[in-house]
Every structure is written in C-alpha cells, then in structure tokens.
Figure 1 (spheres, rainbow, N blue to C red):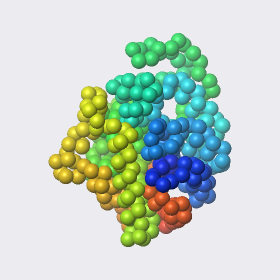
Figure 2: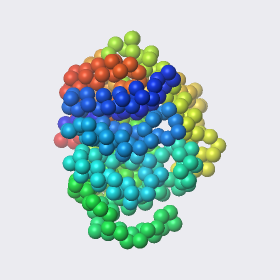
Figure 3: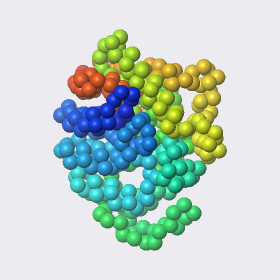
Figure 4: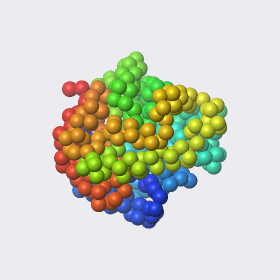
Length: 358
C-alpha cells in the first residue's frame, strides 16, 4: 500500500508575501493531517526566494507541535552545511518529542552560494555527505562515537539522547545521479527520486539500485523509495497555464540562485553528470526553463482524477515506490491548493496501485 505526502516548498514567486506563504505552510500542514496524508516535507534553501525555509528542523519542530498524527520529513536537509553531531542530537530530540513522527531526508546541496557563505568547500560536499551520514548512524546506534579524518575530527563522546525510533529515525537520500544512487544502495538507504526524470530513467535508476544493494547484502524488495511529484487535480485547460508559469519562474530562480551551470561549478567533482545532462538537452533544443516546465507537466500527475491516476501508475511502475510526495503550490491560489489536496486524497490516492513487490 502506498503512502502519500505533501511538499511545502515555501517558494516566493513575484508578487507574493512572505508572511502569507509561511502562514499557509501551517494551514496546509493541518489540512494534510485532516485528509490523512502520511507526511509533510520541507525543503532547505538559503538566500533565495526559491524557498524561504532556511531551517527545516526549526519549521518542522513547530509543525510537529501543531499536529498530532502526521509525520514530518526534510527534503532535504543539506547535511554538509552542519556539524553532524549537532544534527544527530537535534534529530534524536525531535524523534522523541514527536514520538517517532520525524523523517530525515538528506542531500549534499546544489547552491554554490550556500557553501561560499557558510565556509564549506563545495568541491568536497559529496565526501562530507557520506562521512557525516556515517557519523549520524554511529551517533544514534553506538554508545560513543569519535572521528578523525581530513574533513572532520572530534574526540570520543556520548551523543544523547539516543533515538526513540530504533535503530534510528527513517533516513532517505536524494538521488539524481548514478554515483549517489550507488552509494545509497550500498548502505540500503531508500532513495528520494526526482520528479523530472522520465519513467524509463526512474526504472533504470531502480535497476541500478537493486543490483548494487543486492551485491552489498540488502534485499531490494524490502526497501521502498520515495517519488517526488508536482501537479494538480482539476481542469487542465483552466489550471495548466498558471502552473506552467510558476514552474518556469521556479526553474529560472533555481538557475540564478544555484549557479549550477556557472564556470565555478565546472571543476566540482561529480557534478559532471549534471553538465552532461544539460549538454544533451542543449543538443536536443530542450534546455530552457520553458522546456523543463513543459516536460514537468507531461511527466507529472495533473488534470482530472483519471489522468492523475494513469500518470502515477506509469511513474511508479517497476520502481519500488512506497511513498509519493506531491507538491501543489504551483497553483499559487490557496483555495485551489486546498481543493487539489482534498481531491487528490479522496479521488486519486485510493486508486493508485503500489509498485512494491508482493
């Protein structure tokens, strides 16, 4: 059986008010709980209107206090920007205070300015993610932990509290490239899969994960992944235009704020995959944000309930998906967002088949 989550991006498109956006996060979270969504997911961004939430742990703790059943996840927490022991303490504390309702999703981060401002070497962020994640697991599961590497060193300490959820809170990894997919598979971490990958790409990614996971002693059939989606439930002819416009803005703001394809990024190890993707898209004449927005609408669930069900069944087939997280904020209008959330929960979610092996 599939679980369903809700993305709350806190993006601030032109003309929208910070206060309204942040208040709507509270409102949509409470509605999601009323509609029996499994979880709410928060993003982390800095110095950009791409997202106003600089601390998903802070916002998440407030939302956990405002709700009683729904889970709260990070999608993602940029782990290389933090000290792993402070994160280990904070996540374990939230795990206790929420009685196990916190889910920790991690990624290495894309936005160059974040690393410049916080004094972290972006060229080492993949190594930082891997070492820091290992430190988290040790802090949560072992009596004491110490570390001594080129990247981080600290003496032996006992990290408290130990988690409420054993052996530790659920941990997901954002996986877009083969390198990150293979690393997650070696450790048996479930993946967060990208809403802009084609269905064939998602299936190939799952096959790679399954092969590597099995080689390292993990049963792939027991590991369920998360699929990210954006969309809406409603009249396509009336709503597609505003959603596409919002997604075009979102893509332009991503390029501006992340500097992902700027010269400074070209010598960053393991970003070659994203440059190759972009060069391929350029050769195909499909690299502008307008093209990305069009692809997004074609790949993701939007339109009538029947159209959403069909697209979701196509998207999750063969991908071991146990959780689908939807983002509706591209609709911009709070009333339309509430309506889409409600219709999705009542008219779409119950009719989508799980892709997990029986």
